[in-house]
Length: 480
Image (cartoon, rainbow, N blue to C red; front, side, top):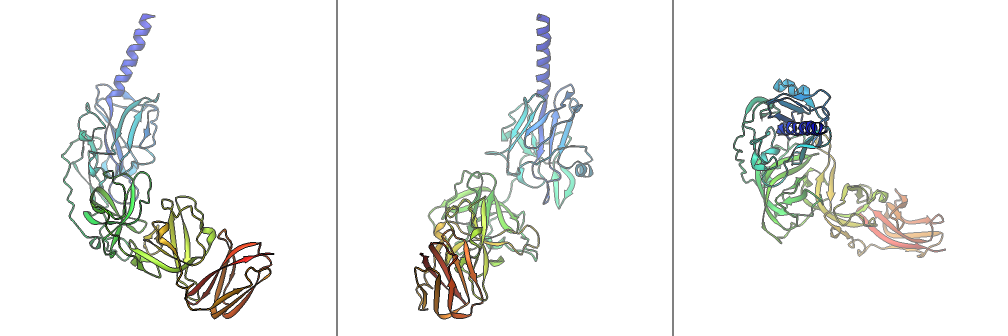
C-alpha cells in the first residue's frame, strides 16, 4: 500500500510539474486591418525538458478550443492556436490549430485548463498598467519572464520583431512560434487635433482619419449610452460645429460620464456602421459644469447632422405601436405631416430615462444627438436623432396657441365627431390612450370633416389635425 501511494504521489507531482511547464507565451488580440481578425493568435510554450501531452485541454476563457487527442508540445517547443490556419500558413509559414470566437481588443481573461479542469495558465490583459499597444493593429504581447507573475502587466511587452508580413497596410510585429523579443513599449504620439480636423469623409462616407492616434478636446454632451462596463457618449466642441462619439468596451481611467465635463481624450479615430467614433486610451477631466451647446433646429437628419446636437420641431410619431420599450433600444419614425412631410428616425436608447415611458401622443419638439447606423458602404443612410433624456422631449404649444380657429364638437361625443377649421384640413390621425393609431384619413382638402365614432369605445382620444405645415392637437371623449 505504501509503495502504491508513493507511486501515485509521484505521478501526480510529475503531472502537475508538466502542466506548469506550459505557459501562455504570446498573443495578438487585434490583428491588422479591418473586418475579421484573421491573424489573431495565442502561442503556448513548453519551457520544460520533456514533452507535454495536452490532449483534451481547452480554453475556458478568451477563445473556444479543445485540443484533439494526441496533441502534444515538445520540450522547448511552441504551439500556436489561430483564428484562420490557412491565412496563418500563407503569411507566416506556420501551422496553427484553429479556435473559434476571438479575443477582445480591449482586454479580457485568457485561461488554459487541462483535461480535468485545472487551470494551467491564465492571463488577464485588461486593466491598469497594460500597454495600450495591445489594442493597436499588428502588435502582439509577449511574456518576458516565465517565472514571473503572468497577470502583471509589467511582465509583458509588445513584440518588436518586424516579420515582413504586411496585412491591409500594417506590418505585424510579433514572434509566433519563436522566442520572444520583449521590446521596450513604443512611445505613442498623440498630437492635439480639433474635432473639425478629423471628421472629413470620402465619397463613400468613410472617415479619412481612421486609425489616427491623437488627442481631442471638448465637452461631454448627453449621458453614457453603455450604462454598465465601458463608455459611449457624445463629445463636441463648445460651438456645436463638430462632434464625435467616444466609445470603449472597457472603462477608461475610471471616468464616470457627466454632461458638461471638459475632457482631454487621447486615443484613436474609428468608425462603426458609418458613425465616426473615438476609441480612448486615456481620459483627463479638465473641469466640470461647463455649458453644453445649444441645439441646431433642423428638418432632416442626414450626414450634416451626424454627431451634432439637433432639434426637430412640430413632429408626431407615425406608428405609435413601434414605441415598444424593449431590447437595448428601439426606433420610431416621426413626421411633420402635411402634403410634403419630413420623416426622421428617432432612436430611444435603453440607458435614457425616456425609455420605459408611455408613447408621446400628439405634436412635440425633440432634441438629441445626430447619429447613424448603416451596415454597409456607402454610408449614406440610417441617420437618427438620439435624445439624451426625457427633458429633451417637449409638447408643442406654438400651434395650439396660434390664431388658427379649430373646433371639434360635440365633446364628449357619442356617434359623430365634427371638425371645423379656418384652414384647409389635409390629414387627421386619431390615437387612443395606449398610443395606438386607430384612425387615419388623408387627402381631405376641406375645412370641415365629420367622423363616425360608432366603433370607438368609451374613453379619451387624441386627434392630430394637419394642414400644410400646421398641426393642431386636440383631446376629445366618447361617452355613451
